[in-house]
Length: 136
Ligand SMILES: [Fe+2]
Ligand SMILES: [Fe+2]
Figure 1 (tube, rainbow, N blue to C red):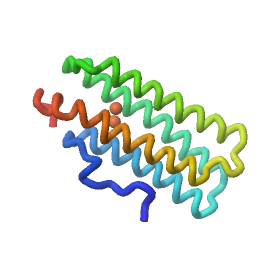
Figure 2 (figure 1 turned 180 degrees about the horizontal axis):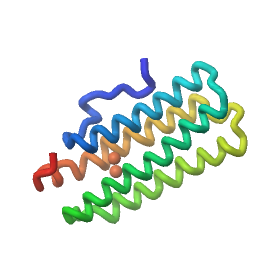
Figure 3 (figure 1 turned 30 degrees about the vertical axis):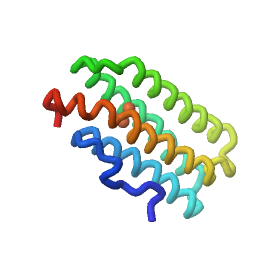
């Protein structure tokens, strides 16, 4: 069973965003699988670096949508994104400095909450607004 299961609960109802969220879920699951199968630090590092890069790309995508449609909670949402990015970069740097044992259950469960809480609490707040503007 994957660490994070994609369910309807995680869907915000906008196709392009759901697809990006699925990609993030898959990347965290891949990191978990790589850890469980005892993959090399090199592979773990590649997945982790990919996750941080794709997170930044996804957040920028959302922020561009907010700007385009004039979302009123833009600043608040962007502040959360900045915090989440800082957290994941800090963890990735820790791994780079000392890879042995850094990808453990605590870190994986942190990443699971890190992503799913943001989607379910904060991203869902903008979904209704964007859908009302005709975004699908
Ligand atoms: Fe998101
Ligand atoms: Fe977001």
